[in-house]
Image 1: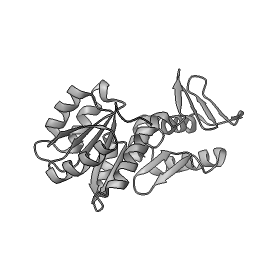
Image 2: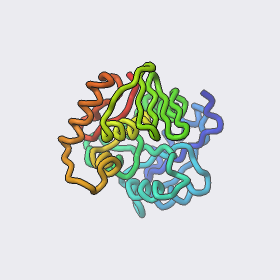
Image 3: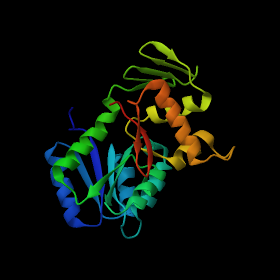
Image 4: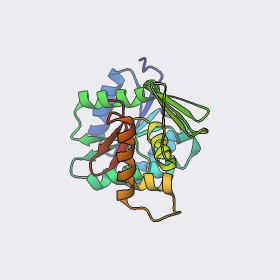
Length: 229
């Protein structure tokens, strides 16, 4: 995959981190832009329209969580990949990041080869064989038709309950993206009924029973994601 035209914005208040990530991503062929805090990051993103934004969480003026939340509220950044840098002890920060729309996170201390591999993988998600046309997701051997509420696996029809279908469509529409339990509740059940985490677990179990174990992955302590294994 050619990376020459793909833009990455790095937002971090530590010059050494900016330099390390910039060097390795430029070597990979990406166009790299820098910002030293959340405020500057949002302003820069509006100017350059990056394909992916890497955000530190703890920064002066505006932290990464708030910057991500603000950008996700802007239509032009709805599909921009956003990745957080987090210390291994900051599980609460990872959950907060996913709640405001993060697509992934990279743990500190940063290992350059692992960083580049993760960024490449995230940017490949749009070319991973998934196609969304007219509310229809086609990925692997699955076809998920949002308008007809139909699912086909290897050409065979799979019968799902309404909420099972909506949960599958939500996860499959963005392969690799981790959805927290809170975001699943908001997207699928909204505020219409009282739903517990147990309800989500039951629906995930039913999807696995009907489709197999190879599609929905549990991210311990955070939520679930769709991933072909």
